[in-house]
Image (cartoon, rainbow over the protein chains, first blue to last red):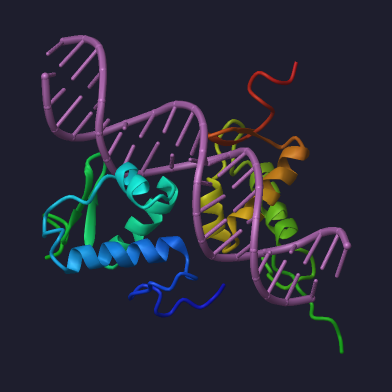
Length: 89
Length: 89
DNA sequence: AGATATTTGTTCGTATGTATC
DNA sequence: GGATACATACGAACAAATATC
């Protein structure tokens, strides 16, 4: 297993995995405010089209953002910016 | 100088390949009845987590059990203990 | 109530590249 | 060179919950 210490920060290097790169882009879109708190991310299908990657890879991106606490997912509905609605405290 | 005496079932030193060892464990879980006839094995992803091995290696394990006739796999669904549902006779 | 579309969840199948022994 | 092992990436099929009409 290769060490991935700072992989979840920001990584636009073209030699890093696609899911890492796309995650970096999405992170920017969130932190810049383009995707406001509470607003939904594009659907997995949509993102797979936008970024030209497979849905399975998109899911890896979303999983990463979720683990960072940047987004939360409501099953069968979508993924949203911010902490879980009734979640954190 | 003396060879290390290894007794544990799960031992990741390459006395034998990992997939052989994990296959042995799964075989035991089946023959002991812990995994009953007709019941599903953990998913490949799940097993990769449980045993700390790659999914590609898990698939090697399952392939071995399948060749032994211990399990059968339904594509996009899962792998189950026993002979194929409509298969045997 | 019912039908349909959307979206996430889950699973196996396949392929490629890299590294190690 | 072959076997083992891992990470990545795409594809396909189906299920289940949700929203909408």
